[in-house]
Image (cartoon, rainbow over all chains, first blue to last red; front, side, top):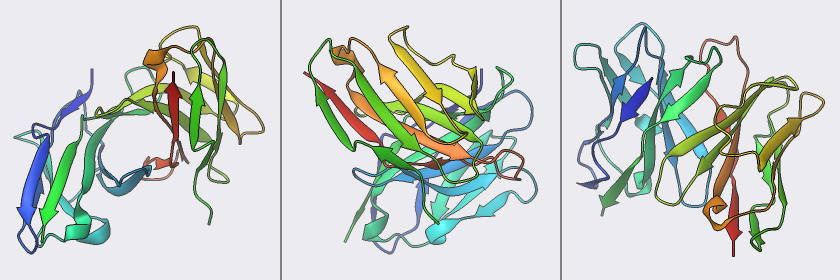
Length: 115
Length: 115
């Protein structure tokens, strides 16, 4: 089955410092990978995706993610964190094993950016 | 344009009662998904609609759960004889298959509390 793992429940970083939120995947075939962010009492917002092409994907709000096939990773990064980036981040992979598309999500990583 | 909307935003119900949750997808999005998010956990896939048909119901946890979609638009998720373990946030998402991204756009969710 397709799956993603987010090994960190929480990531703490000081404002202005670079941040990384980790995600590894396990899929058969080519992975379609996504990052979403969830602010309190809000739905999920799409940040970025990797389908094919360049391994460095740029997304919303200054976020980017690096696809690494050999390490089966898709880590989310930002060069300079903002306090407003504090939220819950989910990595997801497209699952077509039933013949129909759905997303399989990781358990989420809480990012806390301190002033 | 308008995003995915869900109603009600919050629902408190007594154990054993039936509830209906509504989702209005983005206009023109033919694919619609329901997910469940339990407190502190990731998202669980429930059901996928393509048009008014539900080819993938593999995530529905029991026969107390059902969903329908009409007019290739509004969808209703019904939970009969609610149990306390049904307490969660129910998220709806829509997408337009055939675009390059397959990303899903989420509504704000309905928080269901079963007392």
